[in-house]
Image (cartoon, rainbow, N blue to C red; front, side, top):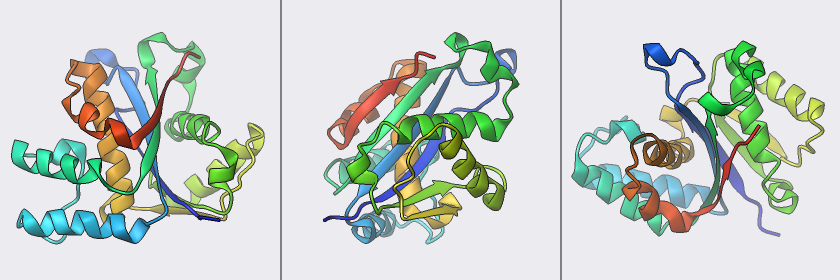
Length: 206
């Protein structure tokens, strides 16, 4: 049986202060690959070819040039992974979300997405999430959320890492960012380039 490595990240923010610049949409994306080191090497190769510093972090909002964005997206379009994502329109979700703590809002949508991924693909896998607050608390709260929502864990390992040190999280960020840009400003170019790597996008209906 092939064991997968999953990594997740978000785009947008958890605030409802739209008059102060809060994003309308909140996106969580998860990538899954049987070849995590090959994916990590792919980003390292793009970084080297673009003469970027070794510590450069690939984030959708860090694409300072169209050339780098195109090079990265085209490399990922043929890479060995698939992904799932969930998009929430914060102007159209139940008011209870407005009183959630930030990490609770985040973990609700992480677990909402995880439960939609086939159980057999989660079985024995590794899940890597970006730090969203304090790592130890996030790990404990993720387990609490999954138990409370009766979502079988299946994952053999769950790790919380900083995105700058984990290329797989950076790829999840790019997927989430492409979706956020599609829905926020109607620019679907990045999403369409990566679409063959995206297995399903869920629209949260509440």
